[in-house]
Structure formats: structure tokens, C-alpha cells
Image: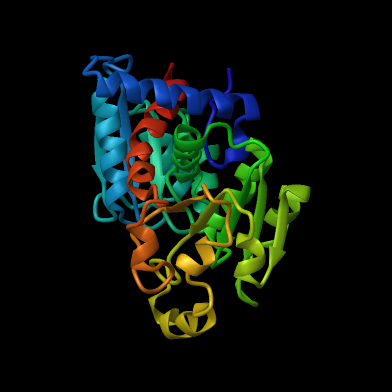
Length: 300
């Protein structure tokens, strides 16, 4: 039986993704009730971080521990991924020692090469191309608050980055409409947009995207590694802040999400981020539960 990886949302079928969301909610209920559930006793997760993250490390490490397994944290100082040793060799060796591997890195191609040579499942915990684990948490959060996301309208405001790319994949796999508003020069990659087909609309006007939306999502204007572009990006994105005025264009019961960390006063106003329509704290917590469901599926 071939090894299954989770590199993008397209690696699972729509039915499998829907099942993951249901399972994540079940595991969250078990955890809140104090029920001990440890199907992964004796299993080891290797966590390779070339790009740091509070939420990703804590959610995967805590999740693996809660499921009865163990997690190994490997920082850039602890590995030679693609430097002293070919990526392919690292994958061949490491996958003989652990049961599953999570990688958070910059180059998507590096992750793909690693997965091609791994004997165990590999999870994409973020690359410069996509961030599928975050989308599992986002969809779980929407389902918990508003029910099925199928047929709904989601507005993406801002950079056509890795999060935007994963929202395009989610629109296709979870069957919702995605309206993207990005400045000129910051649109998502054309091949990914084409993959989304009729589920995706692109404009340069935040109001057009937000009007009637059931969910509004944004991200930072300059991600890690883009610090040198900060001034140019602030200028390009100055009309793309999600504020109360923009939220009023959405549906009355619209939700607001952000993968965090957020910069109040830049991509989102404090009034929105800390307001009643924001579900960002549930969204952050659900990284734990969605990833537990993913780990369980890939290892059992």
C-alpha cells in the first residue's frame, strides 16, 4: 500500500476532508470532556522547522502527545536539510527512524522531494506555496459556528500568498465560492487559480469581494522572509485593511478569520480582530484538533 502524504488539500478527496473535519470536532469534544484517547502510543512524529512558528510547533507537539505518541523538534541547527546532505538522503534515513514527519519550510519543491523519498507520511506544515493544515482548522471553525461551508461565499482580502493558494484549494474541495481581492502584482499564482476553476473570482476591489460574504479572511501584508519588501507592501496594501466598514458589506452573520500572528492597524483593525465577528482564537485552537485528526488518519 503506497504511503499517503498531506502536501496540499488535493491529496485527499472531498469526502475524506469532510470526514477529517467531523473527526476533528469529535476529538475536540473528547479532549474537552477529559477523555483519554491514545491510539498513537509508540508512534513518533519528527517535526522539521526551517521556518519558526508558535502555533504550528505547539499544536503538533501537544496533539501527538495527547494521542499517546511522541514528537521530536528539529530546528535548522538540528538538521542539514538540503545543505550538508541531499534532501533525498535525509528523507531516506529519517523515515526509517520515525513514523511520520512534519515539515515547515520555505521552498515547496524541497518538501515534494522529501516526500518522494520518504517511507512514512509527510505533512506540509507550511511552504511558500501553501498551508493546508491551517485550512483544516479554518473550515472546522466555520462548521462549528455556522454549519456546512458548502455553497457559502468566502472573501480573501490581501496578498495572493500561500494562505490564499490553500483557500483556492479549499474552495474546490469543500465546494464554496472564493472571491479574492488583491492589489495588482500580488495576485495568486495562475496555475493554482486555474485549478480552482469556477469556484474562484479575482478582483482588485476589497468591497467587491466582501459584499455578501459569509466569511472574510486576511493575512499579514509581509510574511516571514519578506521584511525587505515591507515598505513597498504597506503602500500596495493600504486600501486592503479589513475594518468595520468592510465587514458591514458582508452578510450580517459573517465571520472574520486570520491565521495569526496579526498586525492590528495594518491588515486588520483592532475593532474587527477583537470584535464579536472574529473567531481567530477558536481558529488557532482548532489547529490542535484538526491536526490530531490528520495524524490519526495517516497513522491508523
